[in-house]
Image (cartoon, rainbow, N blue to C red; front, side, top):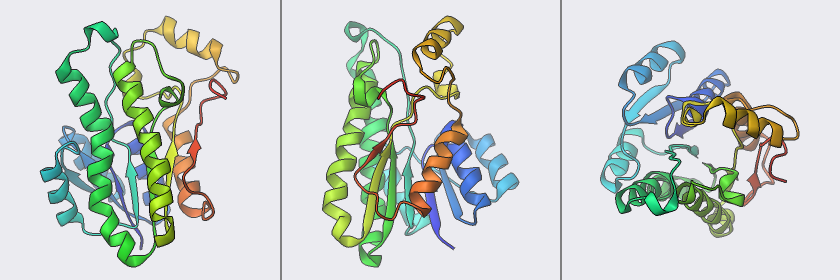
Amino acid sequence: MKKVLITGGTRGIGEATAKLLAKNGYKVYINYLKSDEKAQKLAQEIGVVPVKADVSSPKETKEMFDLVGGVDVLINNAGIAQQKLFTDITSDEWERMLGVNLTGVFNCTKGALPYMINKKSGCIINISSMWGICGASCEVHYSAAKAGVIGFSKALAKEVGPSGIRVNCIAPGMIDTEMNNGFDDETVEMIKEETPLGIIGKPEDIANCVLYLIEQGQFITGQVISPNGGMVI
């Protein structure tokens, strides 16, 4: 049975992915930071194993991998978002945004790679955002972090490809998750109007993309797949 670690695995895209992979026979570990109750509920419902850690902390991330051990698949999904004018972003907010969304990817990948390199196989999927491709007004720190994830994925794919490890990036468009609760109804409708398909994505749309990359994407690495309804082409 292949082992999978999903960071930010108790909500939204992470939760949907955990449910899908567990259903398809994977041993799933879900990382979380604050959602103790939700993590335990998912453990009871679908048999996943919760592991608590702040992915922005090298120490906590190392302890997490000491507990979980080697994994065949790493899904770097943990993330935070904030809508704020650039001139109002504080240094602490900037550091926290990059700490979770980008440094977290670095820390978890460092923890996962030794096992994958030794085994000469592995799959790493990093969750970015369409805003990392084209940028979003009032989300400069978020866009910068997610753009960093894209560059990270492309560069690492070239480096570890000879070791049989695939690294890809999924850059979702607007997805119906708690992270986007900060958008009012008017903004959501405006985004729908700007999206050729005229809909908001579901977490399951991204989970299905993850499963495809794991099981069918044997010749796919270093790529950015952006399920966004055609908003960014």
